[in-house]
Image (cartoon, rainbow, N blue to C red; front, side):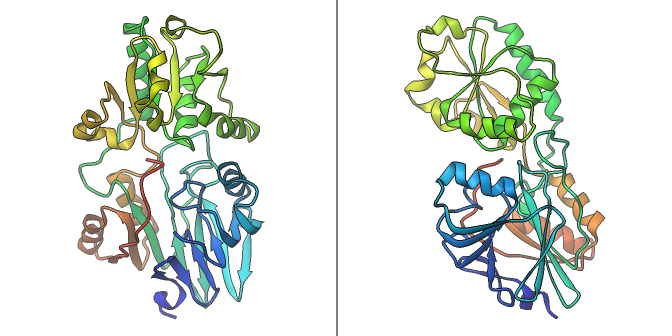
Length: 336
């Protein structure tokens, strides 16, 4: 069987014609298999959704109880047959509940990695390599220039700034799903045990992480009644990046604007956002991790999805691995 008989890019997203399902479709379809809960991969309106229990729960939190016509939870490693095609979900290490999806028939196995990372992260299950004939990898940071620093060292920079400017509120921009909880946990692991204040948009997801056994310590609303600007002096406030451009951010004392993202390696991006303290903390692989993963798996082919596709395709070719870009559209960097 040729790989493109088992899976190929369609306008809605990756499609398996033999199984009759799409993976991370960008528009409503009859049957969707979803890798993780970020909105560019997990959309509402599908007739039937299959995903890990945590991803389904996250979709419900984000979209409401009617996010899909029906749902089916799959455990990591469980094999499910869909019209004769075997599918299984394996940890991707991206955010809570994130999975790679293996699709297999007649000895041909394709692994769709979704978004993944290799760095240790106690807020989600660690990436597990899955042997395959074809590996479909993202390339969000698929350029040799991207070498992400140790996230604990970046957390140390935030703690140093807190010590240097005890009179200022430190506003940390972090995406609501995954990045915010990881930043909070990094602070806790670095020994920061004071209350951390969070924007209302983070509350339900942080509560869910705690329910799932992720210890985030003392979290408090950043909108507590009766608090004035000075009462947040020296505090850490975590919120979605979009909130820092509106009136909400003006309530804090001489704030230090920070942003946790792999894109903070690019100085122009930090400057454009008015970020005073860029924190290079990514939930995606950097260039060395992308190439190391492919070298470890030794797949017969590599298909490269959203991101900087051409550089990674060229690296594969130079290393004797057949590769091609898929040019999928509709995927952004919400969880960067």
